[in-house]
Length: 255
Image 1 (cartoon, rainbow, N blue to C red):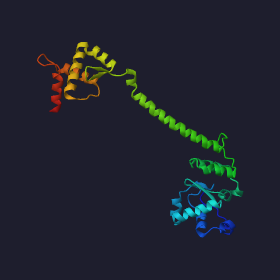
Image 2: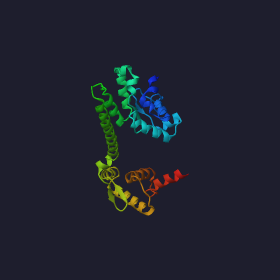
Image 3: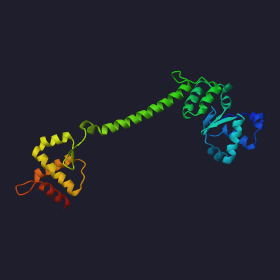
Image 4: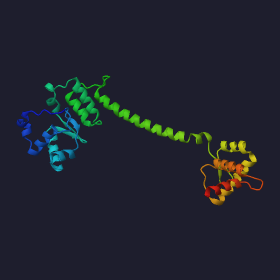
């Protein structure tokens, strides 16, 4: 709302006259500050009240306590409800259809504050969702949807983990060859089919000896053997021993 209605009878109201100057000022602020919603229930941290009125935090606390005790307002978790504000801000104290829709949408933004139900019960407003669901049910459903969303997020995370290790789950566990070489069963069979049983056993032996001597770790023993075999196949000659091709390649890379 671009403006708020403040009746001149405010200053002659017997209940208002019982308030001290600070309490009157804070109550006036609560119905006229730039954060106000015409329903009277809205988000307002106490620190903002102190900053914008220039009144100390301690005085704000005391004044709010008095206003709560005298039933002017209610306050919970940074949400304020000025109890009679709505009936002074709408024609004849009864909100029209558009105003009811605006109130409904506004209440959704208050993150299920306990003041929302108190406000609805107090005014007994016919606030419904498009499918005629009472706002109480709407708020409950929002909480359920939030829980579902959290569950879905967790399920997606679990799914990604399963997908990440899907290959390992299908393959089973790696088999140990000699002291240090580990291969999946399908990797071992692929090596046999690609380079033969004798070559496979020879490269496993050489990789095992190399790891045992150097203490080097490889992410994939299968790919290490394949890399060695490919490089040896390209660089081998009658005068060069096995693995000489791989050694030559490493020396070229270091130049």
